[in-house]
Image (cartoon, rainbow, N blue to C red; front, side):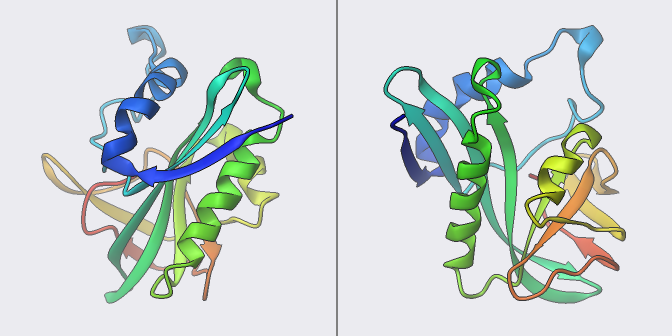
Length: 175
């Protein structure tokens, strides 16, 4: 099996990624998840995995942001938009893409930890890859103002540290 891993500028690669993300997350009105109305940040970078046979099969968005954790500014990396084409799941693509994203985040020496948000059916996937549940509160911006973000569970990854308690303010849109 041959795969190609690209890490591209987020905005420039959006036209490539959009069809995959739409195919994975577009739902009928009756199936919309609780986070369907959330305004999300645009990825700074994107990990895209393609195969010669299938084209684009997996996506992971990478975000860089200065947030506050317990009132102190800290630079973090974010992971969002993790998805694999439904007919290509279970082949390790998401693990490869997530590893590439974490490697890219680690290359930014200012980053102290990584943060992602996920639904309960994905908890085990991230926990087996050393992500830890963040049990504190997370705040973010939305068009209506600052809100407590409770639509998905936050997970942290140890870059320099992995805080699991306290208050994180994303100082912007979630990812």
